[in-house]
Amino acid sequence: MAQVFSAPGKALVAGGYLVLDPAYNAYVTALSSRMHAVIEDSTVSDISRVSISSPQFGGKWEYLIEGCHVRESQNQNNPFLASAIRCAVAYAAPSAPFSATITLFSDPGYHTQENTTRHTSDGCKKTFLYHTAPVEHVPKTGMGSSAGLVTVVTAALLARLTGRPLAELREVVHNVAQVAHCAAQGKVGSGFDVAAAVFGSIVYRRFPPSTIAPLLEADDSVFPNLIRQCADATWNFDHIACALPAGIRLIMGDVNGGSETPRLVAKVLSWRSSDAASAGVYSSLDAANNSFVAALEHLHSQYRDGEKAYWENFERNVQPVAAALGRIRAGLQQLTASSGAEVEPPEQTVLLDQCTELPGCLGGVVPGAGGYDAVCLLVEEQKLQEFSEAAKSLPVTWLDLAEEAEGLIEGNPADYAGLPR
Image (cartoon, rainbow, N blue to C red; front, side, top):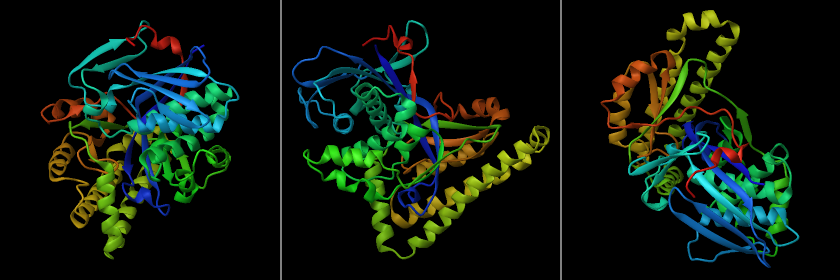
């Protein structure tokens, strides 16, 4: 019987760059565009294998597995797929050969939507865009496609190989997926993207890099024991569920660009280690981020105290959110000027300034590491139609998505029937 798992994309609204340091919190919003993995058993031979297809991009991979050694049989290796398979199989340690087929789907928000054909499932439950180019040639919007990919493949394999329900596996999936994602990248990242994929919208404080670092150097003889110890341990990190207050909508706009996050991060970290003034920039950004989270929490508190008064005073009460977003942007612009990294490039500054002038817009940022990925805005819901009309003149493709409370979930395989594979 088939199983299907999906995980949301993400937008790091507050905490860019600071999220790399365990001293700071970050505000991560999960997004309704999801990555999906449908897993089915296939004919077993004398060697374990995982066959993966991505019909939206014409991708096919076949991974052969011996112990926890994984190789792609057709010279089409994808490091994120290979790492997810290696880590999941090493953790589960199946006692006999197995064979599985995984079909991947991604919702439209992850990639630029030009040159696509729309396909809908038989029951009209799922709609996906099929691209004319392979995935490596399609610009991304910066919503965490690799983290989502690793998370759903890890979840699908762990559920299949252990027979345990997702409710029992969630923490293990998170920990194994973090190891897999870091191993694929060749370094220990902040982990906020995998955490949002598993847990949904969260206030996040990262785990110490030493939690994962030893596994990145481990050979196949010791890796299974190490990853089981690591994945079954209680990690030192925070993932506190959060949500935007009533009446505020998150809007994402694709600018058909894309950024090299590792290059931007390396440039900022190099500047931080060599310039003593960087401490002041980080302190200012942290204060701005904290004021943003405090403003959101205050709105939640006001809503709990009484909905009638909340809506009567809404226009006035959301101003601290707008002011905090302005302070965050000022901090990111200072970071751009000081480090030389294009965290908020001039073109994005112009665009965000224009967006902020539109009806109902409280402000926005280039989320995450910045650069030329999608822009992220917060808009008053009651003025959303007015905002949408005014925003049509801007050089942005507004993505059909919203904030997503839930992280990793198991779905119904029947919802995917009839899609081209």
